Length: 130
Image 1: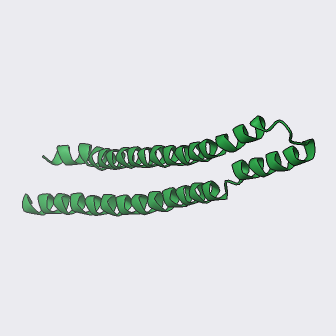
Image 2: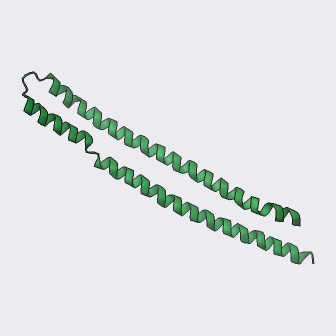
Image 3: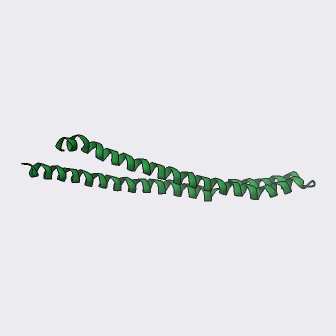
């Protein structure tokens, strides 16, 4: 029993830490994928909304070049005005960092507690058999 604890206590703690980090990584990757899919769908919605405007511009035969340039510039602005998307991306990045830091600190606390528990078990084992 004594040898078992000496040999396996570090492996036990590292295995738990590895499992926690692996599950954390899966969680974050799943969140990122979902959030990126949402951002892509928002961008697709913007493009779909702009298609009728572009078609309307193409179908007007009597339009002069200056008017066409102004309207195309306005459409380009609508398409490139992705401040909302940029804000969402910033939120994703900040949430991921804070969540990751929080979960890592919790994981470190659990590992420290487990190390103490293993040490206490060792102490009990040593004092019990002397």
